[in-house]
Image (cartoon, rainbow, N blue to C red; front, side, top):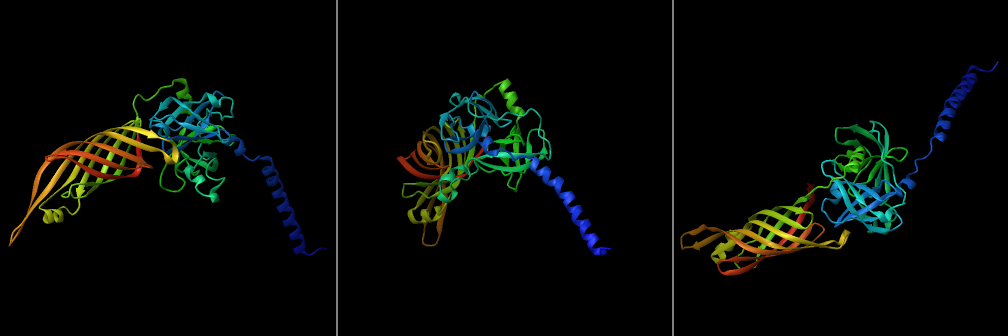
Length: 373
């Protein structure tokens, strides 16, 4: 009779094989997701200096993306996986849902991804397709073959009234790209994320069907943002000033900005020269011309400005130093600016009591586009 320990070992071996066989069979029966085929329908979208993702949703060349990717109003350029580039036309927008539909007839007949009618379900597996940090893909040979046309997998974390939360990685450049289910149907369009890890949001795909049925376009739209501002007058009595400005871009063609600034070393300048002045506020409206796309996109602004000029006067006696504020004045002028990558160099010409004088300004976009409308 075999020892008891031998019988126990045999029984354990049989039980483990019996449990493993069905699992192996189950894994073999589950096909790998055809991510490579899905990515053929994904596009790179560039408007001005902004990089986003987009996706073909039918064989007629209809393209879906996020509204904030095309809110600037510039005609978007689309690039396919095999390198074809076309200019698309915006045919419908839904700013509140952050959705947009484009028309690119040159892409008719290419592979597309179907839009799923059913709502996303908490816990189901999804794939986010797109181009995270897309401009960096060509910055180093080390990154060749990565970033653009990439995929990340996750699950639906929550289903809200307007947005669906997922834990698949979404990063700058993924915006406007499709999030698909296990068989490649679009369940949503990448919209935004929070600063925490794996907390991202997509707009439900049902909004695309509604937009196709009743195509509407925002009558007026654009972006708004903020920048850090430095201004230095060319007059010897001018003190430098630092501050911040809010700017509103209407379709990337009209720019309205308002800034508040504070002086640096104005008392020292006044004590040295008898007086000092600086720009304490700015209100400007400019027309914008943009040249190029992507990384080297450059803006040229030309318009009018009104500056709030403040000053300090000083007098040094044998036994005292006197400082007093000069009268505040509003000065009209003009502005010319050249910008790239969210920052710009500006020249302002201001009319003062003694004629025209100039100021040199630097804007550093922080953090660039902050919102859309």
